[in-house]
Image 1 (cartoon, rainbow, N blue to C red):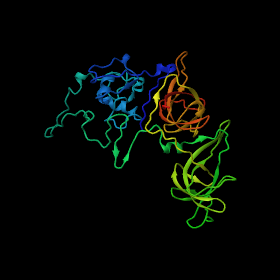
Image 2 (image 1 turned 30 degrees about the vertical axis):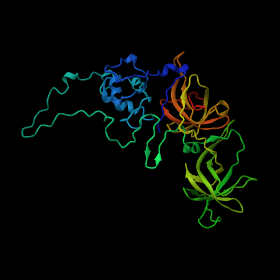
Image 3 (image 1 turned 45 degrees about the vertical axis):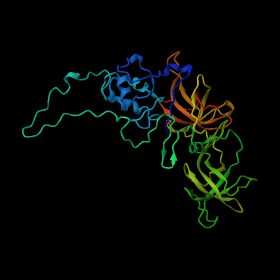
Image 4 (image 1 turned 135 degrees about the vertical axis):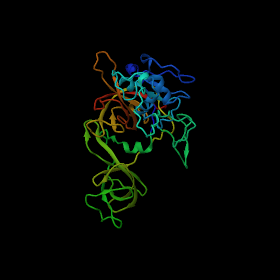
Length: 392
């Protein structure tokens, strides 16, 4: 999944300089180190090969630019106008113009004029090997590729009968992300267990269900289920003071049979292990944003991380966090936040450590999906700021 994000808050502008849009062909001259932007905005006709040559004096460094922009560039042979490629990580690593791949900064290299000057000793009767050949540059736009070619950042190509379109949030992300109950009394039913093929009494003890298995469920007190109802199956691993239960979805079930004590439902989607003792509740309608994408904002709202959905030692990309901002603050699915880390230097601006895309929103809280992580600092209490907003 690809995202195009750039950090543009006036409070932390020193950590991400927006690159100017260039017109025409790629520059023929290297950009001095002190003038290199931390982000480059791609224009028509550019390649990663060109950018590596322009900014770092060595076109063979193009894989390094691709490596730190894999959330933006799906195929390194294809970059498109308007894409915002980060260069700051390479500059922070001390990459200098003309420095060969793998060379350490400050270590003297063999002069170019002397490289390959002394030929290897020739063994009599053995044909000499040809000199090594440099790897070719990335293929041109006319070269064949297994990837669907797109004519621009927002274009779509039909693959078979399905069309892939870039979306701010997808249905799967919304339903699988999880949320906080905010101390509200939600209509939780319960999963009793996996059901045998014949009758409801064949419930297996301490069971778990997989796709297309049937499970026995009990509705909440005073409620009933109807045939065809879609229910979210979830675990409640812990409770957060002031925010209620943490709801972690494990799947989706559809009611297929009504019994005297409850209902039987078929598991039609699975996000994790479905087991007895979990809860069910009516599934929320997905607020499909369509093809609308978030746009940059200045001085966006500030908030904080309540907690990580999974309390791992270190947060990883594609994990989820809960924010203390929700619908009441104007947050919507698809909004993009940056996680900040206070600078250790007096008077310096906070440092961006990760980007979050909002995939689920409740009244006072929301769930963010980590789409890019640059440093440590994703933890409870870490400040966040809105940098891209879905159009209203």
